[in-house]
Picture 1: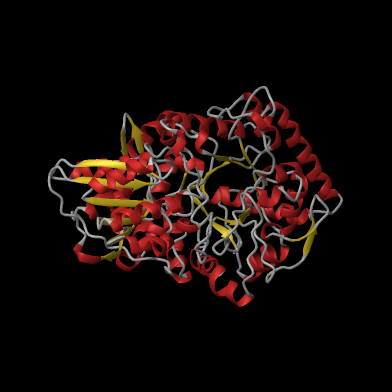
Picture 2: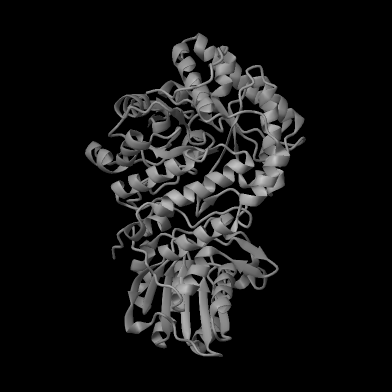
Length: 599
């Protein structure tokens, strides 16, 4: 059934309807200079952007970490955004949206808001805790987002991770079992929406078995139709039937078994339609077959999976023609000059309707779904910043929320191997621990976590996989009583590493991403040759355990390595605190692997 609205729906003009169907990003904004070169974060709303929101009846915006720097700043920005919407001819409130999945994907400052250790860590707690942590994490994130004036969260990701080489999903997935993914996803939808946040299942029809990141290319899933329905689509089908979300986000992925029809790209090549632009997938399957009546939003249209093949106007027209309600990030607005692109896009879309490239009735029905959703969740443009600030400071990152975050981090830790009773570590005062980590900050985080709960003062040395002196590393391993090595696979992005401190002292020993696994293996071989007590920790997708477990006496998986505090040489994160408690035997590792590890 369609979303029911308790508020009478305004009759919108065609231009107003089309404005509601656009969701823009203002990640960066410069008053001067080319948009491509602008890297000034938009932290308060310039008059030019406020006027554009009002003039075009824009339906929503998406915030990034550059836009979210403190509680006060976020609340003020969101008040400015909704005030601009109130000045539009429709006076409809904005969807103010964000990617706050938890774990790897968290746009709010980690030292301010509660970020958790992510979906795969939730999956690892399922056998002991069922859907408890899925529900609790969503409730906490919803409470914190709502306090800031945010009303849409692009979560949960219910992609079934079936590919160990998946570069973009991996630990963003609850695991490889479609039924478990559906159960945990439904719990999160309820947790978000029962606490005032519109959720968005993603990435339909499934991003779990890809080895290409749709941010950088166009992935293709060659599953048979039978496999697609059993694995990729199964969580969507179950959640739509039991806990239908306000939104569902599409994937820029080719699924030839579902739709093998083609487009001609901007360079004249014939290509299979990505799901975002496939009417068979969006209208026939999602709408008619799975009976989804909510709002469908595209994944970002500036991603290479779309932008390499279509100009912005073509991308939006194809997306709307497929049955998608909202075009997310359809054009890049980085300067005042770029606002002319928005004017042209609206003009082009009006023309597309009048020339019947787009169906007028479908556009109207789409706008009605959007306004019905806003009405259902009682979105409005009135915003008391003073009251909001008092409430936000009380709830965001509260002790109760941080306690749930710490509980999840510990309960997710999975012990995969423990020979010779290596764990828990039995350490004496003055003993030497050599830590091998993807970068120096993670070394510091684990060292400080261990020292904070150890009865004894211990000596620590570190090898960063971004760069280390091999001779010094061998010397440190030789002196060590215990070697603790951590690895993050797939490779960390530059954003996740967050600094170049490892390379400042001696660039001679800098290592490329491709060299780092070999470097880790070489150091583990040294430790094994010297018969050192060695623990290997998989910090992200646990598939790397197959590669490195033979070199270690004990193996743990944490599924996360968030650093939430990094100031004045104090570096902390919930995963490292949890690991320290398990390594020293203060708490047990209760998690179970949510994916299969194969040699």
